[in-house]
Amino acid sequence: YQYLRRYKREKDLDHFLFIPEKTEGTEAECLKLLLEFCGRHNPSWTELSNFTHFLNFQLSKCEKSVFCSPAVGEDFKGF
Image 1 (cartoon, helix red, strand yellow):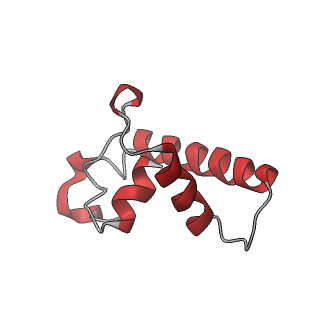
Image 2 (cartoon, one colour; image 1 turned 90 degrees about the vertical axis):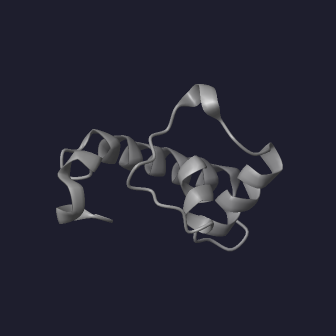
Image 3 (cartoon, helix red, strand yellow; image 1 turned 45 degrees about the vertical axis):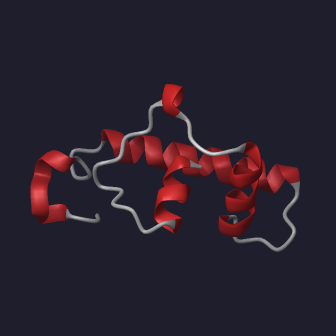
């Protein structure tokens, strides 16, 4: 949700790192964004769950990737 929130507001995601202790927003905002980005019209809870698990897995891998690290500078900006 934190990434989707920043993406929707067109914030820079290259230097953002999710920290569970610093959650933002409300449950209603979270659900609204998940419904918006899920890609399904009127998704079931299972579809939302699968979407969030997949997104979380991908973003966790991205955070650990050398290529997506802010340390690479401008070479891979937005990658």
